Image (cartoon, one colour):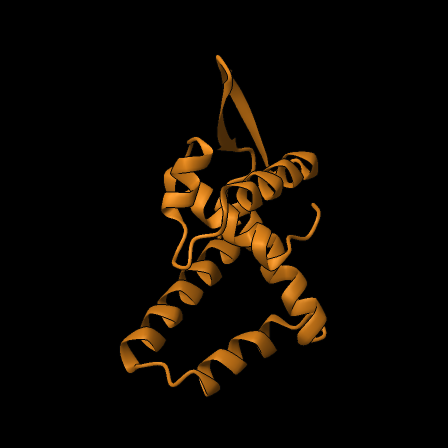
Length: 125
């Protein structure tokens, strides 16, 4: 899977939020300041070439939709992030967030529960 630029990622976030839509729908889903129609159109064409989105033609209009879901992209992104910044150590990644992000006790307990559930799954395999 190819890596997204910041602008492409912003378009994908909008696409994942609206699920499908025309250029005007994508623009409406973007934060202020809104990019120009031609800018969005160009980035959408790039995303099509990269295989992230596709479209259905309705007359002269194109309705775009994502081909890759947010969860799949997030997983690939996190793996690459861990590899590049934490020497492929998810322990280091989790430690960084736990130590540096001032997580609340509730958030830490939720993370602990998720990890305990995964440990149980692995033990029962």
